[in-house]
Length: 572
Image (cartoon, rainbow, N blue to C red; front, side, top):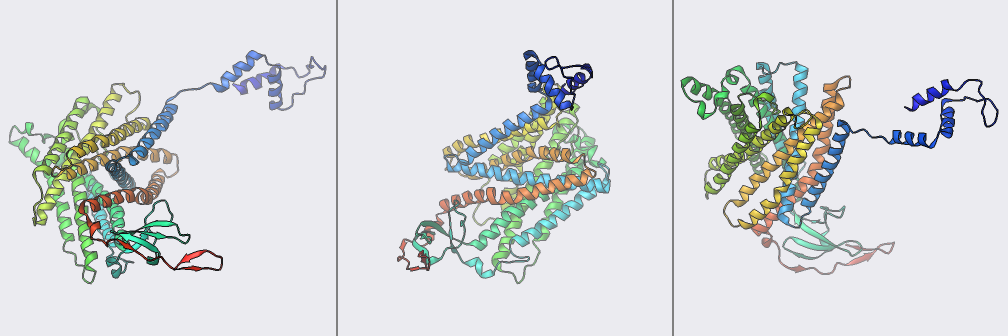
């Protein structure tokens, strides 16, 4: 508009015209000077019109997306801050656990999907082909090997930089998160009072600082196992789930797995079809089980017994993670296939014509039923003293997998509901648009975090009931998986949008995604996981009363002081 006015001003004013006020001819000068003179002679109405033109706003889809993102993320961030600082220790612990599980799940799924997409692009494999299935299982085996290599390094068996003697000793360290010296060693001569593993020492200025007796070597090992090993176990679980989906997409299983519902077993052919569909899941889980059994034959001769025990305990934990996540994912995949009669891919994308609000409600009810079944299993099947190890593993695996089925079924229901609303033009956007994905993730995350408050009230009422702690732990894990997976498509789409205009979009997408993963992982380990582990350790110590085994009241003699050359008092 402004350029049009400038051009008209140049052509409408004659070249030899005189200025009426001065009698001198016009000096056209530059376009900017001409525009300034036009503004000077403009009327008040013209100025008002120009002002309206400059301040005019256009509300498009892009502006709506920015507005929804800004308002939604700000509200969600503030709600999270309130929960992690709630006036209740259990609420804080639940909030940190959900946040930690969500970040680890999101990061591992985001990294795996982009690596798998890049490999498929580089190898130029066709979808649903035998070669794609072979590649998926090869990736699963690679991640499985890397997982146990990371566990060996984290436990101190591979390339260990931890002395064996350090595993048996505890040191006095600063325990004050407000100080930069937090977790630094304290000279025992500075301690003036100690009891039950806690102490009060003084710094160079005589200011009191709180200390604690801690085994730093074991805490380093535990920190590695709870960060890198958990991240790799989730990557391996998603690789296993992807391999199972590729197996179900093979023609032998794809054409028959739709008859998995019991109601469809009307004759021998349908029974055979259903057995084929379930056979793929059984074969896949059997392969995972056998792979973990091969790890048990590893020999760790010459290594410290404590490190070896930590290694095999961590292997048992990651086995539950991998088998629980992959088994629950494949079960929800089969249920979705049976309800709609159409297979989805690994990202839950399904043909819109096969889904509706009714199918979304059905799969959500199935998820609730499995959550109730997991709760009943915790209450009815309790551990016994000196029970065999295999019995403990089976019980914990069933409890974990059944609870996680609820997570995947809920995610299916959310995705199907969104697609159906977009299909019916209730939402005037595409289901895969960033605005829709952000709104879904914000709504899902808000509901998941809001559930923490009633969960805390319920736990207070049934605190003394047997197995209640295990039940709430499974629910918290399920909520964390829901939150983490709901945010992954948003960042995946954002990376795709940022990379599509580059000369090598696939390589750029991989680089951006890996950069995001390597930024998030250290931050998660340092600022989120440390809080989760701290609250878990405090709860365990409070319930087990292990602090009573520490030393009793001891009042130390006042430390001797010396004067340095600058006159500052220092403690020996």
